[in-house]
Amino acid sequence: MAQEGRKFARKVLFYQCLVAILLALIFSVFIGKYTGISALYGGLICVVPGKVFAFLAFRYAGASQNQLVVRSFNKGSKLKFLITIVMFAVIFRWPNLQPLPLFISYFVTLMVQWPIIIFLSRADR
Image (cartoon, rainbow, N blue to C red; front, side):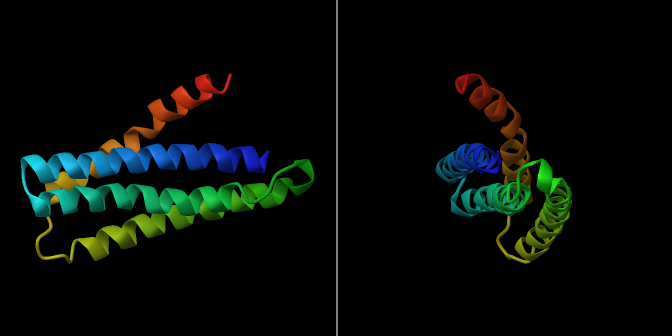
């Protein structure tokens, strides 16, 4: 079960990375270099904490390790939230940051996980 969860999470994170890179390229080509970099940072702020959460959330599996599974999900959620806040704080110190592309990319990369999950769930059937 844990291995299936890790594999599924890897696929979701892969597609989220593609979306983040695509958004960064679109912003770079049509608006400018710093806008593209800001958009890339927004995508990374979504994907990096998601990777940490997936690693922790799918570490354990099975009824015999039920308590470990719950603790791992809880720890992963808290750490994901903390890493997201820290990454926003660090990236906002960058002098050429463009906030709007950063937030657009973060939001789109975050929201695209739901259609990706639905698509991958249907494809696995």
